[in-house]
Amino acid sequence: MLRPARLIPSGVQGYHRETIATSNDAFAYCSTMALHIFRLKDNTLQKVIAAHERPISAICWCPEDPQLLASCSIGMRMAIWDIENEEEKTALKVSEVPTMMDWAFGLEKIAVATSNGSINFWDYKANKTNRIFSVAEKSCKVLRFHPRNAQKLLCGLEDGSLTVYNSQQQKKVHIVGKSKTSKDAVTDAQWDPLSEDYLLVSFADGSLTLFDVSRQAELHSFDKQAQAIRSLAWAKAQPGNFVSATDRVGLLKLWNVSQRTPLGQIKVGNTGVLCVKAVPSEPNWFVLSFKNSAVGVCDIAARTMRFMSSPGHSETIFDVAFHPKDQDLIGTASYDGYVKLWRISTHESVREMYAGKEQLLYGLAFGPGATKVCCVSGSGMLFIFKVDTGETLVKQQVHTGQGFRCEWNQRGPCYIATGGNDGYACVVNEKDGSVVSRLTHPSAVFGVAWHPMQEGILATGC
Image 1 (tube, rainbow, N blue to C red):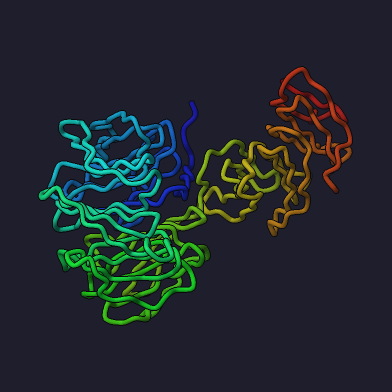
Image 2 (image 1 turned 120 degrees about the vertical axis):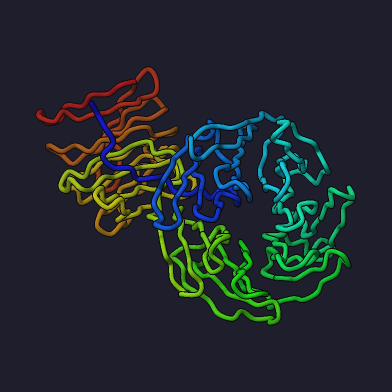
């Protein structure tokens, strides 16, 4: 009977912004369709929950019950999970795609923004939603309850304005922001935890501003940044301190509201940061998600990373292959466009090879001697990479439709066989990617295999 020997978890997905969450003793992130729960004290993976059948668009933790985590997906479904028992506590099918959610402190409701522009309250005990107001389609970029006053909800918009809704008074306050000038989108917004009405807001042009909601006025502007701020979080260890991050570089900048310029910066990784979440129980700790699909925990007081995961795949893995010369290495090819080599004993990613943003990878094979690795993509491209450096040696169109499978000949001429949706099996020269032979089939070719003992014998399946 087979049993799991090692688990290499998926990486955090980067299509949506609210894909990480924190509680007092844990943090979570979502891959495409699963929730990953880590224990904070030792940064170990505790749970993997297959949450949705379509990609997850947002997650949020219950502020009062650490065993409850909410998620929503582009499949128009929302759910609340009992983490301890790995069970779905309640779920609701909705008529619009939910894109963001935030859990109100002290109230049994979750705010949900949809792609159609509806801002709803989900009463999960009654399991029904109520539309409270609407914005332009796909314009909601940020959704936040006030951390101490759950009657207040902010919505940051694509046109650079903000709407603050008071559910007790059933009134909206509109903050102009950038909507009358440059129309740069709101990239993040955070309530000041020490104030009822102050908001920290970042915009796509790199500007950063503190607003007073009660007066609908700008209180203070900070020095404009060369790169747009992607995420903000307050640092509760020191009143008025906060951190910012950009998706361009792996840095956290430290600020105080009394100063226009940053107090300093901390290097947190080799790629840009997508999201920052403060850990409630540790005023100096922040959980970060990265552009390369890694997640980490930063201690800004010690100016160090307490934890950094290997950058896992953020999308479905369609092929795997053992390294023929090293039994502790395995290769993977994914829909996210990456080929990755993994050290099985340590779960570490030791090499990444990127085919490109639009290259969805379906097949993978090592060459003779394992000095090269090839893959085929959804656009019909064949890629050959150098294993020790990750260098792209060949990039060649071999199919007019999707390429499904590739196999490297281990005996005789160094040819690569590929199968595609265009009904061809191709025999390709590894040196330049030129097609030596094109074998016609009655339908899409899903399987190719060279005979391991007899030279020049190729089997195909369609």
